[in-house]
Length: 411
Ligand SMILES: Cc1cc2nc3c(=O)[nH]c(=O)nc-3n(C[C@H](O)[C@H](O)[C@H](O)COP(=O)(O)OP(=O)(O)OC[C@H]3O[C@@H](n4cnc5c(N)ncnc54)[C@H](O)[C@@H]3O)c2cc1C
Image (cartoon, rainbow, N blue to C red; front, side, top):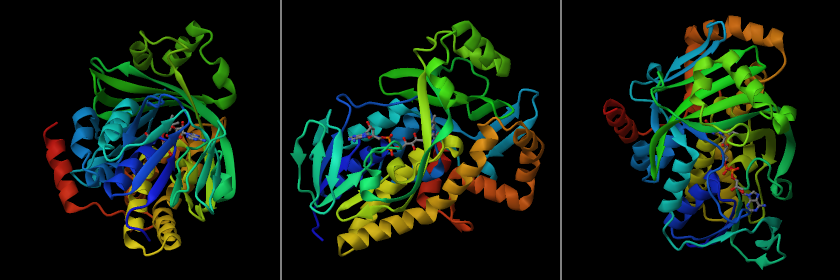
């Protein structure tokens, strides 16, 4: 394999951005193709787990993330009757660990600024076809690009290219989605906790501290409002009713939304459940949500996308031929993420569905089960992204743990 390859990356989301940084840092010639004319962050905020943080650490970007993100030490969910459904603290797994709430704008800027080597990005070019044998691309203006030694498809959960490259086992939209936005944190009483409130599985409000972003020093929270995907187009048209509904679940949360325009200030999110048996064909390979889209219930997607990028870089470093590298990349990543796919598929209906009986059982059993010794360890490992398969562990290097420990103490 050539030490310096000509690589096309399709999509400039978290996966594509991390790939651009990691692969160009290794001396590869990277060209990014992005559908939108003016790429930027989409959505509100998200939670980086210790896995994702360890990838940023390996890319030399952890300090920049810590500068903007909000340290999250606890995940707490309760019903509207204040019954605890979930209560987990990172420190129960390891005293140094925490999650980092980040604005989408912060991670976008961070990765964008870090891609300094031979930057080549074609914006407003949606790729409509990949010739995986010859490494050629065709865009929606009819232009052809390439040949490339490797084409990395990172076009997200609604990927139109996935089926050309991978062997898709299934690919279906979840019947539920969400509205979300950023709001000023002000004197929010839980600055280091992800908090959620539920009514059955039909309604959920989530509030996640996500810190600041470059150019905007105001600390913010990411607000999440769950609802059926079919209701999304009309959600919030009757503003007074929408606010009353959110207030019924969580009055503290709706107070923060006073300056939010409803519905125009709310982004809509839909998600998919996609299983792909083979992630690569010829010179092309799937990365991020294009390879393994899942519901955001476990808050792992960005973390997985970052880990994919690093695993692909490392596989290209180690292998002597491209098929061997792509096989190794897929094997390594599936070993980590298959269990997340499994759990997100089974847990999502407990939090987003019309199954009131299932939600009742969740309210009764979820918290007690997560406190029994075996269940506790498993829940914490899943939460932190550090479970690998059913019993394995994602390795967190001692130097990284030390850096987290120092950062955690100084907050
Ligand atoms: C409500 C919600 C909350 C979430 N919370 C979390 C969380 O707390 N923690 C977490 O880790 N994850 C979370 N996620 C999941 C996370 O957002 C995704 O897993 C992650 O963004 C996937 O990154 P990606 O780069 O694979 O795809 P994307 O970010 O979707 O990027 C795909 C890019 O490809 C471009 N594109 C698409 N088609 C083409 C084409 N044909 N040609 C060229 N470009 C194209 C798109 O414009 C886009 O820029 C959440 C998701 C949602 C919806």
